[in-house]
Structures are given as structure tokens and as C-alpha cells.
Length: 304
Ligand code: CAA
Image (cartoon, rainbow, N blue to C red; front, side, top):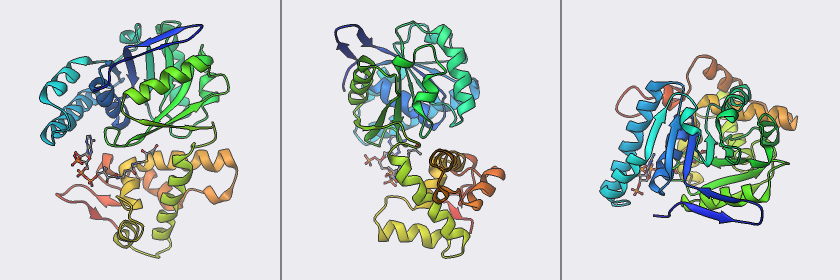
């Protein structure tokens, strides 16, 4: 296991030992999982105590699976679980060296979080956002420390996927970039640097493909099963695009397509009306029990 990282440079020394994570959904809990296994003290924060309880249970279950598959030892798991504590306000983040925001993909929600968070933090604490599409420069401007603010975008499932995207805002300074890059490496991830453009690199390419798969369904070109089988066996994707959409969350898929559509002002990014309708229906994919598949039984069943 890699340990916490110390970065020295001319002006500041950023010694990252304690990481705060805001949002205990699938991304926040995955980030807590890898950060605690890498030796960091983790403070996982969510306004909803129920969500925190669920997140800790998920982390435990996923670490148990890693123990069973001999990826980590039972000792690593137990030590990591002890390093995670939870809270429903920002008080526990008063000594965090780095806070990673992983709340819902909604700019207004993130703005409100940063405004409420900043007064609690040490002046030298760094802030990273796990946004999958929103402008880092714009989010940074809502904080009291745009130079200590950066995009750190993890992929789902966080414990399995090797990539993180690192995105500098216009004001992000070199010590912040280097410190957060070193944390990413300590978490066992390979960083790819993206410029601050809508949806960065992975989602700029991946989400239009997912959206096109939904158009393919909407226009009746193929069934859910035909589309997913085609891309799994015909393009060797680990998941079909509709299964992947359900896995990411249809609300997140729609939010990313809207950022692309509005941010790049190009009609080729128009969200498929069927995606909009599913989100309006509350059919958000795996997490809500229904999306392009119905998850209520033993195995997922295509809904179209
Ligand atoms: N925690 C820990 N380990 C996990 C895990 C989790 N949450 N989920 C799966 N694993 C592990 C399993 O234990 C298993 O480990 P071994 O190799 O040691 O056996 C391995 O991952 C494979 O899992 P499974 O055998 O259960 O299932 P699978 O072979 O079908 O793989 C998958 C599952 C890894 C999720 C695979 O289907 C996959 O890679 N899918 C594509 C995922 C993808 O594209 N993610 C990116 C989404 S886009 C994104 O995240 C950006 C955004 O902003 C929207």
C-alpha cells in the first residue's frame, strides 16, 4: 500500500494526511474506500445520515470482496475501515489537508457547498472537485482560494478504474497541482491532464456514445439487449452503453449532456428525449432500481 504524501516546494509545504470527502454517494464512498486503503485519514461528510450508513456498509462489502479475492489482507481492510469517520456537517473538516467534493452533479449545489465549507477549512487546505463536467474555473471562483482549487475526476467504480483526470482552473497554482497529482498516484491511479473544457476528456468522448445508444433505442433501431450485446461483442466494451448509462446514473448522464450541449453550443450534443423522459420519471438507473433495465429481481431485465 502507498502511504500519505509529502510535497515540498519553494513557497509551501503541503503535507497531505487527512482527506475530507463531501458526498457519500457512489463516487464519494469509492473515493473514501481508496483513500483509506492508501493510509489517509478520511472524513466522509453527507447531509443525510442514512446515506453515510449505506456508504460505510458499501465500503465494507467492497473491501470484503477484495479480501476474498486476495487483493488486500484482512488487516489492511480493518485498518482502513478504522481510518474512516463520518459526519453530517463540515465541523470534522477543520483540520483536513485536502477536501474532495463529490456531491450531486449540479452547479448550484456545488456552489452552496463551497460557500458553506470554506470558513471551516484551514487557510492552507486544498479543495478538489470530482465534477465530471462543470467548469473548474467557475467552481473555483465560488471559493476563497481559487489558486488552491483543482478538478480531480475519478471513474466509477473507483476501486477498480485506474484513471483520474486532473483539471487545472485558470488560477490553480503549481504546488496544488503537484500535491493533488501525488495524492492521485498514492491512491494507485494514473492521472491524465485535461484542459478545463466542458466534460473534460473521458466524458466528452464517452457520453455522446451513450447518448447515441439511447437515440438508437429511441428510434427503434435495436432493443436494449441488441444494442448492449452489439457493443459488448462487436466493440469489446466491458458493459453495453445502456447498462453503462444505468450504472453511471441517468441523471448524471443527462447533466453531462446538458453541460456539453450548452457549453459547446453544438446541436450534436442534444440530450436524447428518451433520456430526459426517464430522468423525469425518476428512472435513474441502477441506483433507483429502474432505468434501461429493471433491477428488482435476481438479474437485470431489459425494459424495452
Ligand atoms: N469495489 C471493489 N472492487 C470491485 C468493485 C467495487 N465497487 N466492483 C467490481 N470490483 C472488482 C471485482 O471484485 C472484480 O475483481 P477481480 O478482477 O479481482 O475478480 C473486478 O472488479 C471485476 O468485477 P466483476 O467480476 O464483479 O464484474 P465484471 O467483470 O463485470 O466487471 C466492471 C465489472 C469492472 C464494473 C466492468 O464491467 C467495467 O469495467 N465496466 C465499465 C465501467 C466504466 O466504463 N466506468 C467508467 C464510467 S464513466 C465514469 O465513471 C465517468 C463519469 O463521470 C460518468
